[in-house]
Image (cartoon, rainbow, N blue to C red):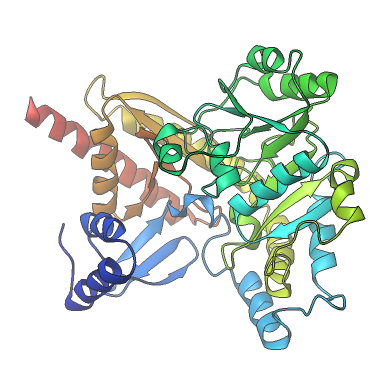
Length: 418
């Protein structure tokens, strides 16, 4: 693929000079086009190309520029985007209430932030503030790139350049509740941070009894439990939260990605009153300048209302089941032995290849067929589909067709190399 026009070439040069040369090279590999506008399930480039957006790392579950969310944000920008923090503002408490009301269990205290990693830092600091000084995480887990979040994102490639990281971190296998029990044996007060489904590891779904058992173990051992729903929450997996239908009682649940409807950066740590007590006692113990700004929380409130109004949870489940069947059928068009597994829940789907080169080739074939997807940061063998819940029937059929055609092309390419 080549850069499509002179403007794209200029943008690529500017990106390379003033931003990241590596990022510029990657974008050029995928055609180097400029994203000019987006609406619903689609992205439109500066030269008029249209793509079905199943990428974006899970942010646009409501699609792009959802009118209800955009209207709420635009009105808030015009009226009062940033508060003084001296007085109350009239939207943030409503957004906190709306978020708490859709969260499970006793999670009703909210701290708004600007990114998923910032929410992770909030959760880790709350664990420390409550006396839980040791952190337990899972192999190949992903929680962000700030220092605390990176310290519990157990992938050596990304950790080593920044060592020494935050101390007292223990890594255990994902999906292994016995390993957690062993890690807590005769240990100092600890916290455990875990994704209900590992995203960047390649859509790794644990057994149904794993998280309920984790919750029981944490309760029995006084372990502070942080569940990272930044990717999986807000209906992405066909439930409001991946833990919604399980007996899981976290002290803190982390929310992000789709929380603002894909319009402004926002995340949150939603906590039990007991876990939040240190921040209740001292409100300046932890803070975020832009966290909880009216522009953010107007988006949150509108996104939650839109999620309810359009039954995004049910739609994610229904469309996701259909797409998983289609993805598995499409994968049969690849060469024998090329695909290890297709898996997913709701609108979080993954394909694992034997050869990581095949995952990159599939991304290119899908791009040629009008569909954007993402790779998995911690597992180059896996590509991920995170489509929006606002796809029309035509969009779904387009995606199914593109899947089938791209896998056939990949299979023919593989045969041709033999």
